[in-house]
View 1: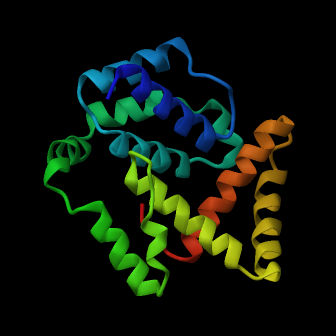
View 2: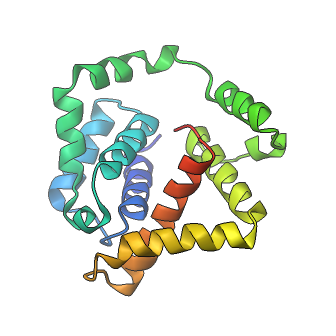
Length: 180
């Protein structure tokens, strides 16, 4: 994969999930480039971004940076082992097939043209649950997420929408035990 495509995909994923900002800082661009050079997979980077974001309350996410993800990669032996063993891991399709079977979901949720199969299938599943959820349940999740976000009055409208979407996704993942 070309470096520019790698960079754009990580940047898009990071900013969408962070819910704030419109571009990476110069330091963050250097970090993403170093990950490309180290041949760290997008899957691992995305997983670490989500893990780091989930540690923070919404009102602290504005200050979140890829620097903390990079520090975790560089200092954590467990992450280092995960990066080295990625090629030996279970087929991601099998993990999702097992999940779909356990939840009695249609197999067409496995269909994707995206290069990042894990993220695309997870997204398909989240969207499926949301579309098939009763309105009352959607309102309950929406109300919960809005109360979480209401504590952060410093959000711009577009940042609020991104944070809202991110938190709704998080709630759906938790409710239906959707794997990372």
